[in-house]
Image (cartoon, rainbow, N blue to C red; front, side):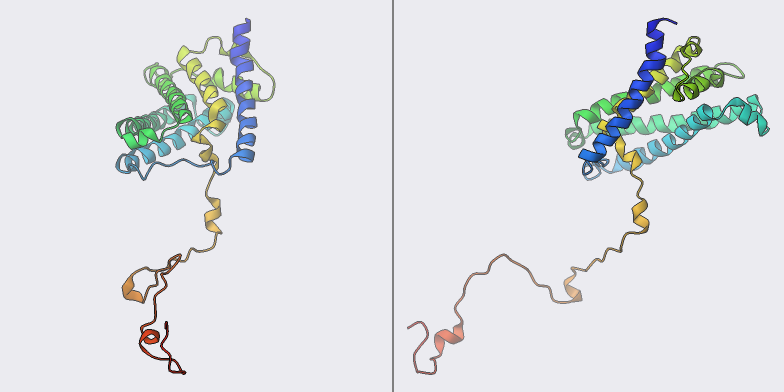
Length: 262
């Protein structure tokens, strides 16, 4: 294998993983207040209400499909009685539907940011870079699935013979870059774009993926008090009040027969 192949399929993935791990640690230590989605819902909610669930639910099933395809060897699915043909259908049909949902949701989110000026002005440089890399990773994966799995013949391309074992061995420091030599270019672009997105992940709003709201189940209740005037008298708190003379003091003499203010 030449040096370029060693860099692309050994060094670059590991550099991306190291950047992800160190970056997440640095972000958590230095920017916990910025560990949010930076929501722009207050600027526009109609498109967001449609595109966001479509994108997030689509991505959940896409990620689940990646875990099943990359982490579980072919021998495992055969051992539980799932043939290669059945696995191909199980992976391709739901995966394509989930990919369509993720792509449509992402297009809607990007269109929303470009179309509405208030949302566009609140988009940071890191957001723009994130959207470009996220779109590249999702679109390349969708193109790879459609071109090689849907229209690639009855069995499609068997990535579990090349990409899956390459990744598993890479993660245990037993790299085999030669296994990626004959992989279709669509999958190669998808793999590289995926690791690039992983490298910049800690420096974008994508960190909110690791902030599951588990604390909601144990946090104390929030007590809301009505401001409706019909429920009782309200008092306006002001920082200062002007000094006014008491009419009773002005118009009535004191005990010595003198008038106040005289």
